[in-house]
Length: 296
Image (cartoon, rainbow, N blue to C red; front, side, top):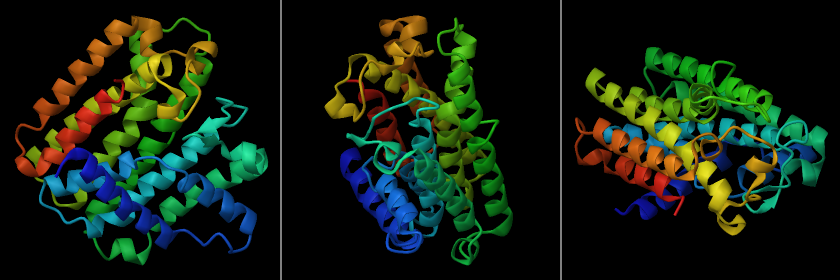
């Protein structure tokens, strides 16, 4: 199966899972639930949940038991986008080619919708449907890792560093720390969650962890590059916004050519890390190439 076909097939499965777990738009308070659905079903390739599934499949696991956890990663990712777009943070008007949540529903409802999505995520991880499908010790490990990746030691911490570094001189080490926390941590957690719950061996888990660390950083570098030379129709948000806000990015710190070289090197690193795995890891290999090739 080609990567594009794989991504689309798994995206549809994730969307079905999300529709099953979210309260309907008409449930009270309807305004809040409409805002949640607006952001969750506003597009996107579902990369993080698909990585959960692909990592599980790479070590011989089945897709169906992993779908609740895949949905969790999308709920967390989407909540972070809703909050990142707020005027108090990135102050963005567009997300995935549409007005951002706070532009449609107001800041207060957007904040509450993000809060609700995050809360739903951890409720889903501990729901009977999820608990009954997995080894309790492995599931507990996954819950702890997702919480760490989403919190102050990971994504939220990275967003904080990103905000406070705006307009400041940031060195290479500081920049990488921001990116590995803000974007890389949740991607790493996604592949580890799929592999752990599918019963990965220690060798398999180490390979997939190294893969997740490489593609997590590569994803943010590719995102930085797209913000410089992409098109709004492709990115779904304003191009050039990072430079306008004085954000610390790879092109800003290292230059565009070096940023592209670093992304290519991380792709090679990700592919090399998967050498202990067989053809079942081919979707992971294809996704790594897709992540870096987005810049073209």
